[in-house]
Image (cartoon, rainbow, N blue to C red; front, side, top):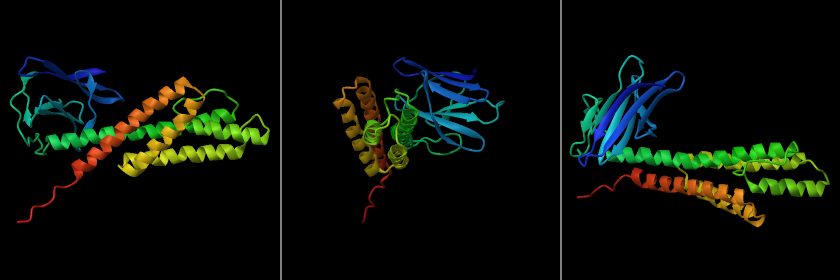
Length: 253
């Protein structure tokens, strides 16, 4: 990975931050601030924008699509000349070089979208892991992924007991896939901001975690706890995003 741009941004207190832009074949561009990778804010036919907040300022990195063009850094809409700069007093409603507003509200909305999506992605991990666990169980394998649903193991165990077989019956496998698929659909709704389905999915997964508590599966309990924390964080971000996107009531005079 080749370093294509680097800036040192200094706060009034003297604290310094490093803004890096790296480019690698097939992997594309990586923009980071103090080693923390930034997600792409938006894009145009000519470039991509990466935006973050720093000490009350809005930092925008524009990375051109053309490999020969150099990335640029803007602070509160003003371009940074050179590789070092000191943060000025914050400017409200700043614009970048393209004239598009990048204010704190836009940045907050972007960050909440990222958190909502990251939380909702847990449903995909849960559903996908559950499907894999069902396939492994049907193949006679005794291990699986702890993030998967415990209820699928319960379904398989009951089906094997009723059928007097050592392998998972086909109807139990179909039920497993249907249950796991339901979580995939919940994940799709959650990532689109449906708070109701988001909450239902969290409640169902919390109930599923009780199965691991009953059998005293420490690993399953721990992984479920981590996943539930991520899900709740995503739900809270989705709720906050609803408030941010709700237009202010018009004043009637």
